[in-house]
Image (tube, rainbow, N blue to C red; front, side, top):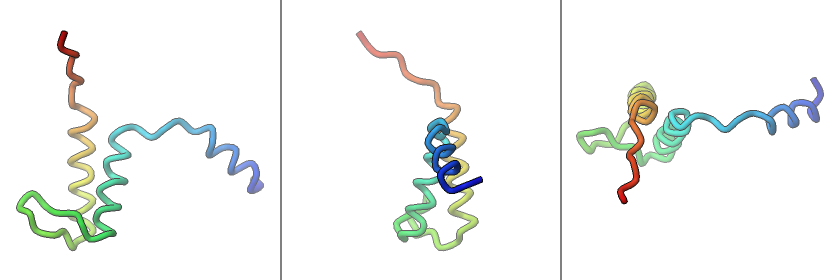
Amino acid sequence: MTAHQQAASRRTQPAPPKGHQKVEKVMHEFKEGTLKSSSGEKVTDRNQAVAIGLSEQRRAEHKPQRKAKK
C-alpha cells in the first residue's frame, strides 16, 4: 500500500467511539504527569493509567443519555 493509499484510508475511517476518546485522554494526561487517582495522588504506573482509562471507558459507553427537560 502506498503512502497516498494509507492516507486516504485513514480519512475514511469513522470517528472513534466515545470510550476510545476517554482512554486517549487519560493516557495523554498520564504522559503529561497530570493524571490523578481517585485518592488524589499522581499516577506514576502506566498499568494503573490503563486501568483508569478502561474504567472510564466502561462508564462512558454504558451511561444512559439524559432526556432534555422541557
